[in-house]
Image 1 (cartoon, rainbow, N blue to C red):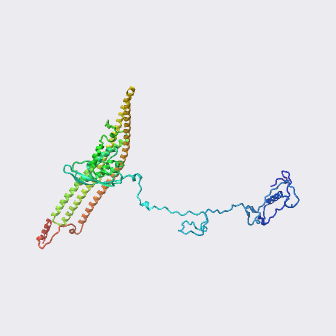
Image 2 (image 1 turned 135 degrees about the vertical axis):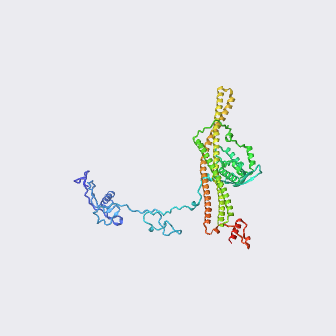
Image 3 (image 1 turned 45 degrees about the horizontal axis):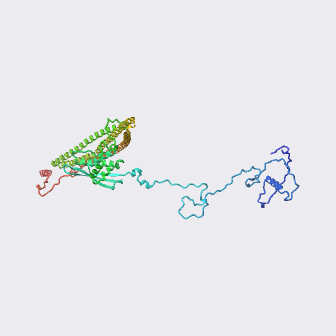
Amino acid sequence: MDLGEAGDSPWGDVPSQSSSRAPTFSQEDGLSKTQTQDVESSQQSQSSIKSPTGRGSRGPVRRLVAQPTKLEAADDPLGPLGAAPGADAQADEPPVPPQKEQMVIRTTMPPTTQRRAGPADPHRIDDDDAERPIGMRAPPPVQAAQPSPVRATSQPSVSIEQAAKPSFYITVGDPIKVGDLTSSHIVYSVRTKTTSKGYRQSEFEVKRRYRDFLWLYTTMHGNNPGVVVPPPPEKQALNRFESNFVESRRAALEKMLNKTAAHPTLQHDPDLKLFLESESFNVDVKHKERREPIPGESKGVLGSLGISVGGGNKFVEQDDWFHDRRVYLDALENQLKALMKSMDTMVIQRKAMAESAGEFSASLHALSTVELSPTLSGPLDALSDLQLTIRDVYDRQAQQDVLTFGITIDEYIRLIGSVKQAFSQRQKAFYSWHNAESELQKRKSSQDKLLRQGRSQQDRLNQVGAEVADAERKVHQARLLFEDMGRLMRAELDRFEREKVEDFKSSVETFLESAVEAQKELIEKWETFLMQLDAEDDETVFYRPPIYENSGKAASRGDTAVDRARATINEDSD
C-alpha cells in the first residue's frame, strides 16, 4: 500500500534505495535456500549494527536515514510448515491454508507379540493392532440375564415378624369316657407341636376334660380385656355321650385351641402355657387361684388397678364406628341363628331319608326272597343292596354337613357372643372412667372447702391433697385403659372380619365338595344298576342263591324258600 503519492514519508525521510540481494547460505548451516526478503533485510541490519568493524565492509558506509516504506504483497512459495511439492509451478496460485498436524496419541500399552498362556480371550484384548478395527473399539457383548434356578426353587421370603412369630399345631383327639354313672365325663388328648422357646419341649401331650377348656376361656377373657377370645362349645345335658355329639365337640375344641394359639396376644398368655403343658393341671390351678384369685365378671384389670366398676345409667355409645359395628353384629347373629336352624332341619331330613332308604331296602329284600321268578328276584335283591348304599351315603352326608358347615356357623355364633362381652368390658371401662372423674370432683370440692377455712387444718389439707393426687392418677389410668381398649377392639373386629371370610369360604367349599362327591357316588351306583338291567344275559347278571344237586330229587331242594319254590316248579315242569 502506498503511503504517499510522491513517496514522501510523514517524517520527512528520504526513501531507501537499497536493493541488495539476500545473502545465500550453504546447506551445511542447516538453512534452506529460499528465505523471505524480510528475514534477509533484518539479518543484514542486525549484523551491521552489532559489529560494524568485526569484518570488512562491502562498500562505503551509509548513513541510516528514515525513508518512506512501501509495503507490497510478497509471494511466499513456502507454507508455514515447509515447502509444498510443485511450489515453482504453483507460484501464481494463492497459498494453501495451514492444516493441523496429525499426531498419534497412544493411550494403551503397545501390544506384545507373544500371547500369554492361558484360556482364550473372549474380548480379543491381546490381538495385534493390525487385526483391530480402525476407530473406537466396540464394547464386549453382554449376555441377557438368566433367571437363577436357586431363586426359582426356593421358598418365598417372609417378614422378620412372621419368621420370629412362634407356630402352634394342636390336635384334640382320642375321646374316652371315664368315671361312674354319676361322675362320668369325656377326657380328650391334647397334643401340641410348637416352635416357641417358652415351652420345655417342642412336642408334648396332656389329658383335659371339657371344664378345663371352659376354665381357660374364662381366665383368658379376664386377663385380656378387649380381646375376642375364641369360646368353647356350649354345654349339653342330653345325649352328651352320643358319638356324633362327641365328634362335633372334639372338632370345636380343637379349633378353639388353634385359634387361641394363633392369636398374637393370647399366645403369650401364661394360662395358655399352663393349660397346654401342665401334667398336674388341677393342682396347679388350685395353687394359682390361691395366689391370684380369678377376676370375676365385674372386676378384671379395672379391679386390679383399684378402679371401681359400676353399672351406672344406661350406656350411650359416643363413637359412631362402634355403634355401627354393634348393629351389624346383632343382625349377623340373627342371620346365623336362622341359618343354623335351617341346617339342623336339613340334617334331620337327610337322616330321615336315610332311615326311609333302609326300610325300603328291607322291604325289597323280603320281596325278593318270596319271588318265584329268578328274573325278578335278582333285580329286586340288587335294588335292595342299592338302597342300603343310599342309606349310608345320606348318613355320611348328614354328618359331614354338621362337621363342615354347621360347626362353622355355631362357632361364629359363639364368637359374636365373645365380641359382645368385649363390648361390655369397654362399657364398664367407660363407667369406671366417669366414676373416677366424679370421685375426683368430690375430692377437689373437699380440698377447696379446707382451703377456704385457712391453715388451721394443715394435716387434713395434706391428706386431702394426697387423695386428690390419687384420684387424678385413677382418672388418668381409667381414661388410658378406655382408649387402649377402643383401639384394641378396632383391630380385633378387623381380624374377626378377615377370619370370618376365610372360614366361611373354606367351609362352603368343603360342603359343596362333599355334596358333589355324594351325588357322584349315587349316580355311579344307579348307572351300574341300569347296566345290569339292560344286559342280554339276565340270569348271569344278578346274584341267585346256589342250588345243590344231589342224586335224589328231594335232596336237590335248597334250604331257602326260593330254592324250594324253584324245585317245585321244576318238578311240575317235568
